[in-house]
Amino acid sequence: MDKPYPPLYYTDYLQLDTLLNCQSRKSEEYGDPAHDEMLFIIVHQAYELWFKQILFELDSAIALLSKDPVREQDVGTCVSRLQRITEIQKILIDQLRVLETMTPLDFLDFRDYLFPASGFQSIQFRLLEIRLGLESDTRLRYNQAAYHSRVSPEHRDLLIENEQKRTMFGAIEHWLERTPFLEFGEYRFWDEYRVAVQSMLGRDREVIENNPTLSDDEKVQQVLELGQTEEHFGAIFDPDRHDALRKDGKLRLSHRATLAALFISLYRDQPILSMPYRLLAGLVDMDELLTTWRYRHALMVHRMIGTKIGTGGSSGYQYLKSTAESHRVFRDLTNLSTFLIPRHALPELPDALFRRLGFAHQADIA
Ligand code: HEM
Image (cartoon, rainbow, N blue to C red; front, side):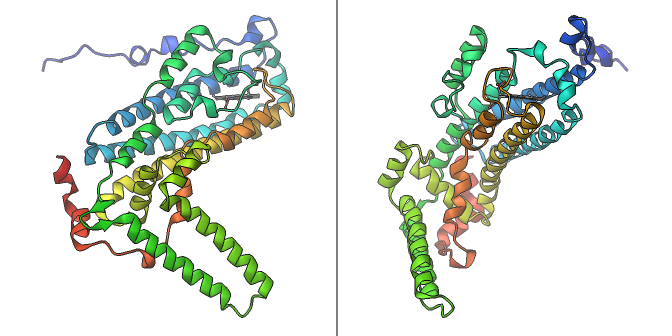
């Protein structure tokens, strides 16, 4: 039988001659080889390879979600890609344990050779943040300078150019804004939902007021807390208030997209909404795992260098710990849980809509 392709050799296919020849220890070059520097290099290189794979998956998911309309099977594909990313992220978190077999004293054997290089200059990590949707004006300032001030001019241009491209946040927001079903004939999702929320909060108030185990002071306190919950719900019912919070940087997702995400989360048991729900959940997972990595990396840094400044010049541990909280991208999706109401209190969907959610949405966009 004729072979359609020439035979391939494993080493050539994977370009191992190149890959396995790019681990050069600076300590060796300067005549004082430090054993652990090899591990330090290989762990970083392994990270960069995984970053490459994550970006590859993320780019394809963004492209699929940027189609108009987004086909249902493509939503399933995006869910699988996100799931692959989150599995990689778990490895990335675990991988720090391998590096931690190097003690802080071992690290000092070669740390001085690294200045001013730093993970802060990882272009792929920055691209990953940008692709997810981290905006440059919401980044923590690094010694009062822009995040790209420490990279080469070519890399700086590349990052700035990438800031103009569609992000996962942008693609999801746009997709959510186009979600059908929020209005269906006479049905208005938010009107029905508002009634259900008001009766739920009314019942909560009654429970507090009629609770014989609470003192008058405790009742006043709990009613006050209930008032705060009502405040939270207020923004979801009032687009102007929502927009004002967006302008203040307290919310990011548009009002329409937030309502759609809420609808999907509340009615996720409907067959047609199950994939969209998994997509939103995948984004929250990804955000959470990246935050976990940031925090885990910060803890490792604390252990390795204590409170010293980083080789890149930041405050080190303090800077990294702060990014864990402030560089989250899909916080609004995570916060949706605030607005969930129990299944038994969910307003019933009109029959016609219920039937559509069961089968027919696909026909609309085929
Ligand atoms: C001994 C191990 C490590 C130490 C002591 C360390 C230390 C630091 C420090 C201090 C910073 C803040 C910037 C600076 O001032 O340099 C930083 C940033 C960073 N490091 Fe590491 N790091 C280590 C390992 C790693 C590994 C294995 C990776 C994987 C790629 C990594 C990726 C990053 C990234 C992406 C940043 C930028 C984070 C941001 O700005 O949000 N680091 N590192």
